[in-house]
Image (cartoon, rainbow over all chains, first blue to last red; front, side, top):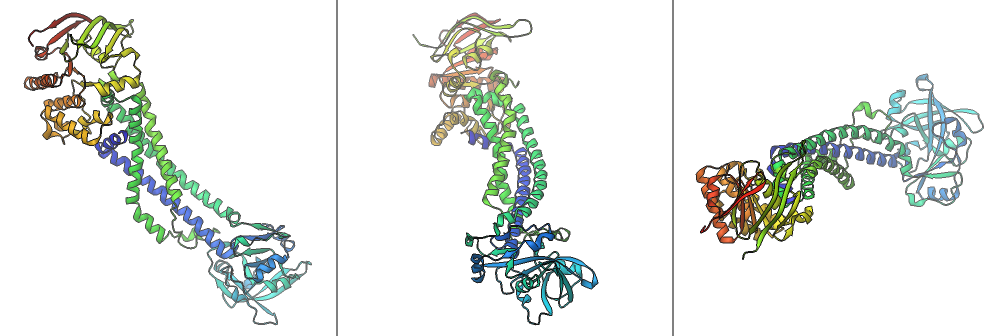
Length: 392
Length: 232
């Protein structure tokens, strides 16, 4: 009954209701779009990082510190038997990491050398270009990314010198040839990275079948005897990227919190005005047999209904926008995609999960309910006889 | 003898003011039988509306006892008095107090919604009430599209739609011209005769007083006269 009366009141309020619904709807469209964009970004980044860097989780040497290249010579171990078995079955891929230097156009450039088997099929890195055709080993094939190529002015076919230090501390050098410049959407496998064959890097480092990382194709293949390695899930690997996306999300949320606040002020104002303008109406309802509690409920439901109508309006007005950005995606501007953030190199397709839609709607509904309920305390203070006379 | 619908004993109502309080009603005794068509008359400030509000359980007395439809008003909590009004008491106001965003039909339907009456029954009752007051053709209009007389007819229909035992009308003709006033009064008198509903008016309009079977005159909150017209 209360709901029916509330619907009648909202429809009867005409333009005032429509404006409130439209304002709320615009805020909802913005919130859903923005949340969808960040969720889509997170999903894209996760997929790309799985495809290019971490697979379905990876083992990392217990001493490895990605921020301290001076420790890298000691942060590798011979691959444990169980993991070696997975590698041989094509379920895992080892990566050996070393610090090094290259000299493109004679300029000293510190790099990260990564050794990966040329026949692996787990990561998207085009390792087939690492196959050493010239077994004399004079020139080692290498793959770099487009960003690395741009920053070092290297092109496919270029030959240059690469230096590194083996585990005994002896410096050595190879000539490497850029056999492929790969276009990867994941900056960490591109920036300052030179990919070479795993076996050859082991030889160059005076190591034998040692690895820093061992990437798994499927996280169900976690082994018991991992020895010097520890398993890092894809969620853990994503923490940095997720944190960065969350920072962006927070700044976006602040903007929409402000817009939501303004929308709530509009609803609060409407309800306050309604209570003043509708004093006689409230008195009449009491005379007709409504309790004050029912009237408070009526006004609160009226306010909440703005959210419900706004959700309907959002699904109608926002649908083309949601579909466009869900299918075509949003291309991050070039300046931003140059930052080392995964997921920005290709258009981000907004992802609207049911839980996100529901939580956004519930948030707006709760805030609307609060903004609608707060002014109603005046009703509880009203004397029916005063209300009938239009007094508060 | 007809049983009293409203029993008032030694009723008083004191409104607190800066100067110690204003006594709106004092030492009032009154019995109103079922089926009455009576008026509370008197000058402004004589306590007519205050008494009507107390009978309608919209206000509380300061002293004395009042029993309405078998319920002691002082013992009713807010929920019980709301239920009593919803089920058994109809109100007619001087300025009609129609809900502006509702149509005529919806205004008349409102008391039945509060009683949670099924839709089909509601429709029948609303149409019956609109027929009584002769305003079925305006059922889709909004209050701002009605004349004063039509507005008050809708107000009567809203009061009568639930077939209450008691209707309280506060200056129902104050905003109407003579012709409309007489039409409205004829309508209410006819309903009183047809349904046996008790009507209590608060008025100082002579046209209304002329229609009353019984006139209780209040002066300064006290009963000054109680005239029962014979043969009416």
